[in-house]
Length: 221
Image 1 (cartoon, rainbow, N blue to C red):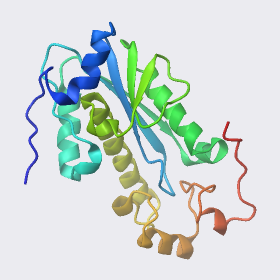
Image 2 (cartoon, helix red, strand yellow; image 1 turned 60 degrees about the vertical axis):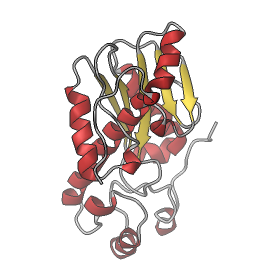
Image 3 (cartoon, rainbow, N blue to C red; image 1 turned 120 degrees about the vertical axis):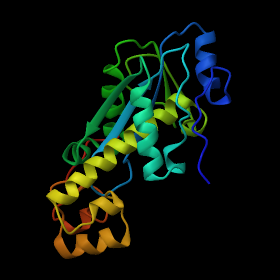
């Protein structure tokens, strides 16, 4: 059954976190989320989305609950919203290997946030994030509770999927267009057959097991 993508009003439950921030005096509230922490290949991508007040917002859903076509539809609606600000940060596999995935995710989120011109508070999915340019509040499963975070999850996922589809043409044989770099049986079989390519994360098992010696990483903290 098709999801209801009717516009949100400021009284909608999905805007409760935003309303709480507005009540505290913050005017420009953005949501941040990432896509691609877990794959064996490709970048981690973060997006920051800030909608203006006083106009209907796209009815964004958690990107994991949407089909690819639905994500594309909502990504277009988000970008077409008058006054919306969007920032995107991408950290490639080589940098992930050097700094570890947690640091890379934080860096991508900070990069995305700094692209917004008007911003004074950030709602972030999951656990607290270091290095953000403004005060923030972490919301566990925020992509299902906040329209701004849900929008960011969609923008990040669509951007990363399109990157992986492009990489599929550049590095044929791995199936990146279908599994997007995740450790599926198809991907693991191709990895054993072909070995790692330039976008594989060499610090991630099982990629690391095919390399001697494995790459060194910075300490976590």
